[in-house]
Length: 270
Length: 320
Ligand SMILES: Nc1ncnc2c1ncn2[C@@H]1O[C@H](COP(=O)(O)OP(=O)(O)OP(=O)(O)O)[C@@H](O)[C@H]1O
Ligand SMILES: [Mg+2]
Image 1 (cartoon, rainbow over the protein chains, first blue to last red):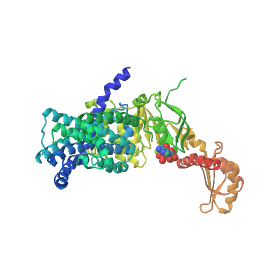
Image 2 (cartoon, rainbow over the protein chains, first blue to last red; image 1 turned 90 degrees about the vertical axis):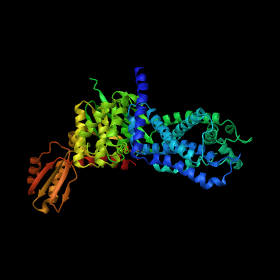
Image 3 (spheres, rainbow over the protein chains, first blue to last red; image 1 turned 135 degrees about the horizontal axis):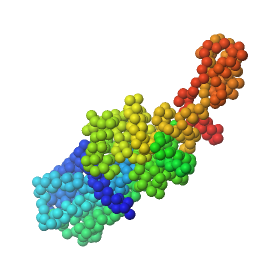
Image 4 (cartoon, rainbow over the protein chains, first blue to last red; image 1 turned 60 degrees about the horizontal axis):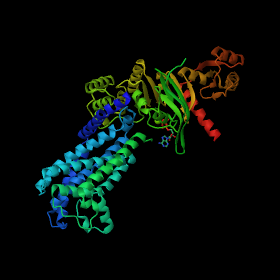
């Protein structure tokens, strides 16, 4: 009994120590952080100015205003990539083994890692929001709804980090994780992040409409009040109820991947 | 009469698919002692350490560490152990100081205590100058020392070191050995693996030789050497006398004599403790062999290691 309370009492402390570890690492090796901050800005220029002129928005809104919420979500989805790479690194270097032999809660490592991902995302959303404001994106809804959108983005980043962590544990080596990384990069492409799904061929549109990323993007567009055209009548259910769908998707992913990660963390047997 | 073992395993088995890495490993390490687990590459040392430190589960058999079952109560085991793995198990992106503080906190030291303890250990392992560099920039020996320091933060009752000194220069090796000795003076138990009998000899109270996943010999460094026996070697005045010398030595030792014309020596191994130098000289003199020199020497550590592990290899080959 006292054993159990001791365990529960030390969990938050262990998780905070682990969070500190990830943040310190980022300070020493800021490469990943820089990419997280800069990549969406590059996409903003690339799509907003280069390709954007060729993309038509239903209802004829401003494309950059349509694009910015999509980029917010790709920052969040990036948690899959960074979570996967950092976990695979730990796995390959012996340090994960040392964590496993310490008498700490088995939640501490995964929670510390995913919590650091949420902080990174928060840091990455700020420059993108400022750049967005500079190119014509505006918050047209209520402040409350906008805060809700940011909270949703962080929740989704948290879910993405758990997915990434699980994939990283499966990948085991940095090389494999690097190869998987290019696949995760495709995920926002098959969604409504950059282009409306209406114009896609049937099977692709089905995938894109049901892509969790699409739900979160549509929810953000709705909450920020950005050119949220009424979903096409034949769009899938998530696009008609984007906020509900985005929440459900995030919770579902968490419900699946938290237990998977913790189980895998505890039972990896090389 | 109930002697307590800090590490106690019975019939440990581990299979990786077709590979049978451990085949019934029995270990009994008394509290407060240093046990040297000695074996060639692929003997199963790392596999055994990983099971004993709860990183891996045995296919069969049981093991208790500090009185706790490794599969039944891994958390209790983890509270009692420290591990330095065969490959670096510190965080290369953190500095030495940050590593030690982190591992201190994760082992329950509060902020100030963790900081203080980290500084203390950096000092002890001569890492103070490098303390604020990322540990990936450390040399192999420095990383090894940091690895060991990370285990000593809370002075765990049972410490596992997997090849702690492989690839280190003599000075770094000595400082690791000193760290280990200091720990056992505080009452801790150490199980270390090594491929060097010299290391086991210098450090261990008991040596357990394993090969192909089972124990092939156990004993103190001295009993192991005695079991191998000694080596008789004589230098003859004239090489014509070599066959005679070989015949006499063969009869005395019951072993196969080794003749070396270039060096004019004849030698043979023996396990007979009653075979003394005067007797060797008397018998050869009686046979009319003129000697320049004669020695009965204990085997070198390398010879012991080769004998202890080669025998099992040949057994396996003939059995196959
Ligand atoms: N994950 C694994 N999958 C398959 N085989 C494995 C695995 N781990 C170890 N083995 C095999 O088990 C045997 C024992 O390996 P182990 O690493 O325990 O040896 P060791 O004594 O530590 O050797 P070394 O001195 O080289 O470190 C070897 O044949 C090895 O190939
Ligand atoms: Mg090994």
